[in-house]
Length: 132
Image (cartoon, rainbow, N blue to C red):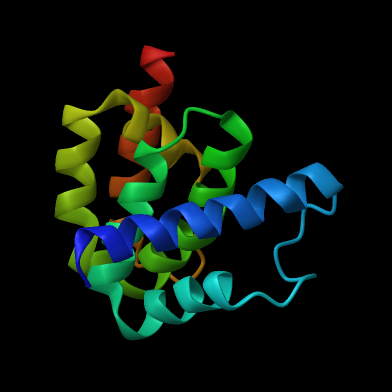
């Protein structure tokens, strides 16, 4: 995927989440939507591009609700499935970007992660909480 495709998928995913928030459903699964489904599938089948879409989406917004949906949705899923592959990048980005570190405070579902991965994610979230 090139950068314009990545950004377009991120924008489309965020527009769909924004609409769901507007409708106050809070559940991205209530409306079948190909772009949202594409990102879900990408997390499992193409994690490198999923990482790029997630990063693009989080850079496009400062809205707390949108960031919470990114954190508790595709970012959490990516880390649950491929956390060991991405944790070094996550830590480096969190050190360089306090907004990303803050985003990590929304990654809660950790039952599919190794204990060492959970500890590293908690350390990032704790660091972010100290800077709030």
